[in-house]
Image (cartoon, rainbow, N blue to C red):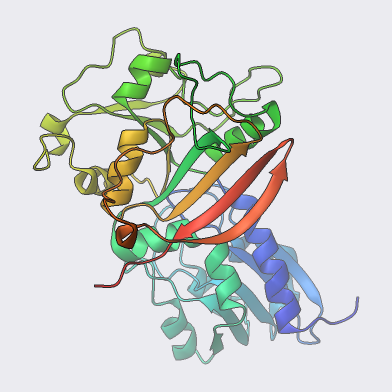
Length: 353
């Protein structure tokens, strides 16, 4: 096998890491490629599920004795603590690896320190190779660990003129089956799906991740969260059907803001404590507006159908904007056609001051 460059190995490690999206939380996604002393790939691995072997351990097992004198290329700084698994930094030292190339340092104070341990053992450590790409692939976990609350994605579906339902309230279906399948795949990558009690009362959604072709449930289900300030969620609501865990988040339990409603910042902090690193905000134009007004949305994924209604509820209500100068500016990062619809991915720009 021909030798590969460290840059090529890191690109492959980032691809491997992505295979763990949706199954590793509350741990990060991590990929690792091991090169022997001649630069040939002798081991690959990724973190597949929480509690399972880390990427470095999988790659070391594949490499065996050929790891000695070689280079480990890993997307995230090797962990330096003993949790459900042992420290990867120690495993790399014991395997005789001479160099470790890291894309992104670990921001978790519990697990960080691997680079220092490796250097203390005489291992060469290099940081920052393809750091931006590795950061993007692990953005939810990294963001959550750095600030102490989950990465929030607001998902909406609407017509070209921004309507989420017709004037009579009907909304099934604004977008195509292809778009709905895409949404369920998106649900499968997050730890919690959040909706307002108004949406539960109006639409009685299940908020589960499903295969729409046969209705079967995905093996891993996100936590269903209903933001319900005064506890109005019916006992027979489908979010209580046992298909997935559900939390009815009330103001009495979470804490109330000045308006008497659930304090959204406190809600996110509580979710972080429950191991939630990525949240999909669905259902409720008013709840979405409150999240946006508070600056709590990190990414927007909109499914826009090639239809016009001219009247009916809008996808967003009261985001704290009263004049054009207060508009929430967005950066479009992707526009993809999904069936007949467009999926628009955007990032809110940080406001000055």
